[in-house]
Image (cartoon, rainbow, N blue to C red; front, side, top):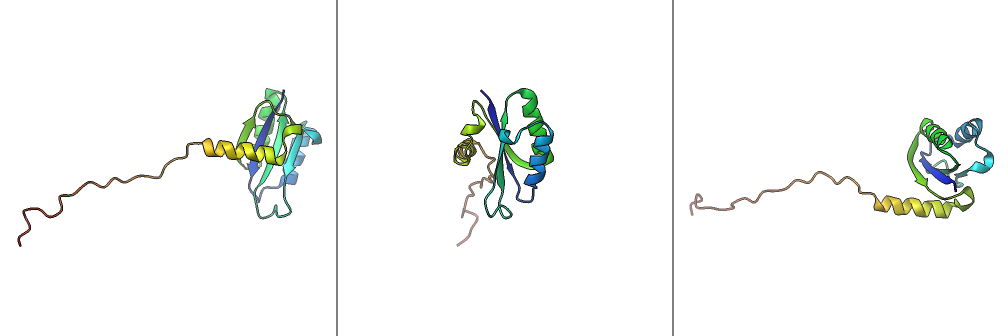
Amino acid sequence: MSNILAGIFDRHSDYKRLETELEASGFENSDYIVYITDEHHRSQYLVSVEIKDVEKGKTAQDIFLQNSVLKTYLFENMGIAQASYSTVKKYIDARSKAEIHNSPDVRIKVQHDGINSEVKA
């Protein structure tokens, strides 16, 4: 079974250039999906590429990096026919919730004595 490499790209990234580079490197039009909306100029977009071997995976990863991918996800045992937008988004949301994010710096206040015997009435 093949795998799906999904990438989230910034709205300023050129998806047409990404498509051209994927096809120039040997991927067929049926091997990838670019999910865009009518408002794609104002939001991020998602791309899924079917990976059938390690070499193709490295090629797709390199193309994603050259096109300023924000985040990538690998979904094993999934074909392009199963990679609908709702399915891929559901898996990405689940992985994002499962990630352990860095916590902000925590400052611990030490307890002070408050008013003590040095205070004169």
